[in-house]
Image (cartoon, rainbow, N blue to C red; front, side):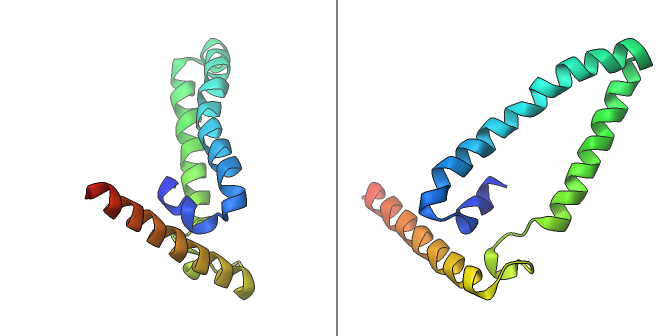
Length: 105
């Protein structure tokens, strides 16, 4: 997921959305600890594994159905937005590569 973010973000959006992405990674821990305690107390310890397995499977299915590696492959964005994103991602990849080459000297 993190690898595809630069292809879909403009410079103005990137810092906010990457921060949102990183913060969202902790939400699972915040949610599962109280939910897991509740499930274990009322339905047994196995229910915690069933619930997280089912939720994870649903999340992965939604991710595979909706996420794409690059804007050029995404079927649900307009041609105008696709052109802007492809142009932006090409620029950012080139700048990142150029900066990496300068660091290696």
